[in-house]
Amino acid sequence: MFILMSVHHPRPEHCAALIESMHRYGASIRGGEGLVAIHTLEDEGCDRLVGLAVFASRDDFERLAPVARAAVAEDPFDEWERLPIDGFRLTEV
Image 1 (cartoon, helix red, strand yellow):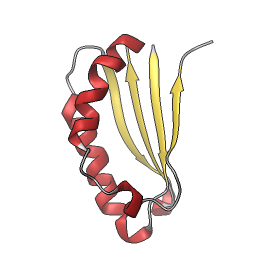
Image 2 (cartoon, rainbow, N blue to C red):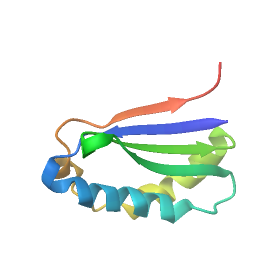
Image 3 (cartoon, rainbow, N blue to C red):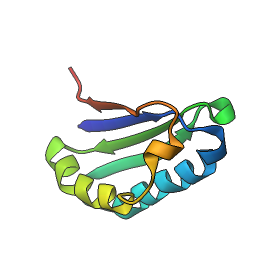
Image 4 (spheres, rainbow, N blue to C red):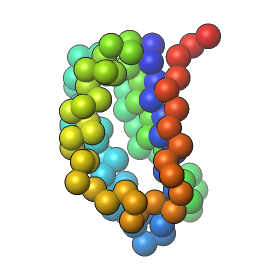
């Protein structure tokens, strides 16, 4: 199992746009072979957003990730985010 977790710190006025972007990212790979689950999660008050994607394997992630990234390639994250995205690539130990 391979988990991608991204913690976003949206500027308040761009929270809705960032959520929509995260939904497009997920929709672009939903149903893809090897994707177990994908979620967009909101911390109360929209202070932080968390993208959580669970893949059957790292190989599945590496195959699907370019498709997902392409779906949001034109999004202005540098304008939407207050801080850099905290990205985690997680495996069980």
